[in-house]
Length: 563
Image (cartoon, rainbow, N blue to C red; front, side, top):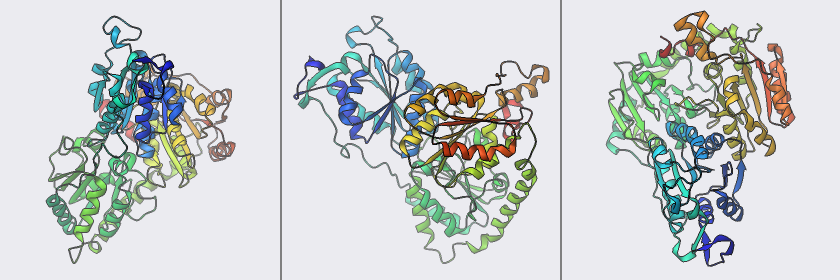
């Protein structure tokens, strides 16, 4: 082996092999924080035309790689140094794992010839990350670098997607090997199609259940977006006249106002449906572990992961596979019936629509409230009105984002981003970074809790540095209010502010200090004008809106941990 500085055209370094493998995967950007272990990867990325976005904290790099995958459908990539660089990124990997988001984290490591000698930043990264990833390994030789990068990507997309991790020791990255000895897999030649069609008999059975159902409902979860099943889902619900509910990344599959788009009547639907189809959502805490579904209903679950189907709740039919392929196949199978039952479901849809109207009427006065401090419902209602069809909405927070989940409705598929089931605060700024980089044609709007913004807010400067404008709103109540509610509920008001109270921070000034746009808002009438001015500024922005700390979202008050 020769040092890369003296390498010629017949040899290639480990870092350049990483870059070639990333390029073969279609990766056009890495999110990173520099370190001595990984700089040869940067050199390779420069040669391969891969952008390098350097951030201020490795957690941001990992979250941005996760966010990039959600927006583009391609795995994202973060590159961090060894030891604390890798441990800082662990939260981002864990979040991607629970959210089923494909990404690759590459971490540095001390040289192999210093293994177990106590080299700088040496830690057992693979052992630490294995439980929260789909694949984790050490690259043992420079010849294997590109091969193992492709292996990591393949595993990230195996079944339900998720994160992979590779640690690459410093001497493996820096060393050069003869080009002919290094296996660099060719794009499109080392990974089979992942679009599993599901059991044909089960597809036929679901088609029959749908046609014969009088009160069906369908929940379109995150995997509908993951598998890009939007068109199939829309065609199925419209052709068969099925009310659709959406959660997670599945939000926006149907636009607001669509006659099959429902949001506020889910509890009523799940209690009264005779057929419930759950697509790409596990029976986790968001679904009450399946207990919120009627015991009288026929329950069908469609998921990319065999391990998820039927977990926590018995089902009547489970289909493992790609939501796009399965929904298309089910619709095609229903065409064999002379009457698909669509006309007979009109009364059921009207029943749900009436339930929606009643729920909306009940809180309409809060959505228009002129009270000060500003009612959170008023803030999220103004944000919902502000969004366009091209606005990607990102929620990062506790109580304030729980309010937004009831009101904010993205106008297009793939235009909703939240942490997912891990509930990780701090994803907002890195998700903005990824979304605006990947889709510069889109407007990005992010709502932060003041506590959530504080976790990764310094990378607002990265957004300024890379000219990634967005409209940011901080719902500021000077506390971690979701936790504050729980403490008051469990221990009384005199113990309600222990460990959860924050300072009265003017985040608009923080934004301006870092080169962005900022405004303070205390009057609800000023929310909309401030949002418009932020949009027109063409800069990363923070509109700091002072919301009432004594008002809590229904979702916060109903959390089982506070009972």
